[in-house]
Length: 118
Image (cartoon, rainbow, N blue to C red; front, side, top):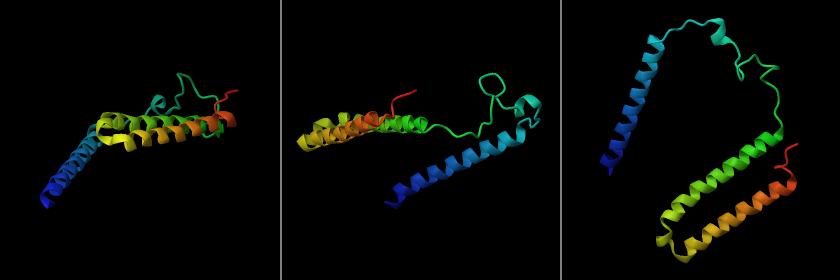
C-alpha cells in the first residue's frame, strides 16, 4: 500500500519541481523593462473612468453565487447520470431531493428580487 502512495508522492514532487524550474526560467530569461504602456491601467481599450477599488452592487455577487450553484449542480448530475444503472431506487430519488432543494433556492432568490436587474 505504501508503494501505491509512493508513486503519487513522486509524481507530485516531480510536478512541483518542474513547475518551479519553469517559473525560475521564465523569470530569469524574460525581459524586465517596464514602459508607460505596460504599467498603465487598461480597461476596454481606454483609460479607466474612475478608481478600480470602488464597491460593487450586491447583485453582482448574487448572480455569481447563483452561477456557482448551478455549475455545482451540473458537476453532481453528470456522475449521477453515468452510474444511474448501479444506484437503484434510492440513488434515483436522492437526486430528485437534491434538485428539489436547488429549485427551492432558485425560487427563493427569484422572489427576493435577486434576479431583477434595474
